[in-house]
Length: 194
Ligand SMILES: [Zn+2]
Image 1 (cartoon, rainbow, N blue to C red):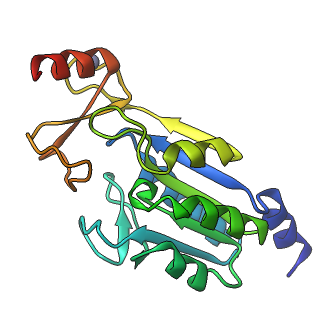
Image 2: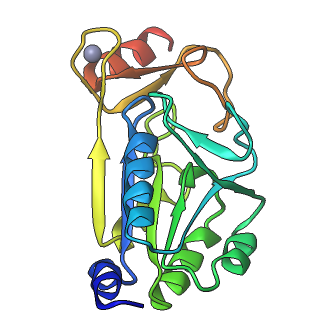
């Protein structure tokens, strides 16, 4: 490895970064940008996503702005560990859908010096912390919290409101099922819906 790429790697050596926020806040866009930059620095990068998310395409991550990168869809965290040998950087999208063992996995991989970039929803459709996100945000070195635009009042949105009546925590969808809304509109809507 050249001195230049060694320095580029050392900057984020073993660091855990989280990109979080509501739906339609641009999380995947930032993840793609960070992965693209790492690749341009000649770092060895792989991108993972949970297999249950089949939006758009199974072997790609595509942002709402239609940028895309290749990604490996995995069933569990063991597959991520197996596929991470010799890498400088791993990125994982939709991190909220993984089981809580993802926390241990990220810790172990960071101890090997791998830079870990995670993106996902910090809250579910009822405003509850989502999956392993609270713990991951606690152990992360860096947190980027993004906001969308409230679809009711055009304010700053940090919640994801589910338009449908489905009560399952996980219900994969897009604008057909979800809206980005601000805290005030989120509370009003939930109150109206009882
Ligand atoms: Zn609003």
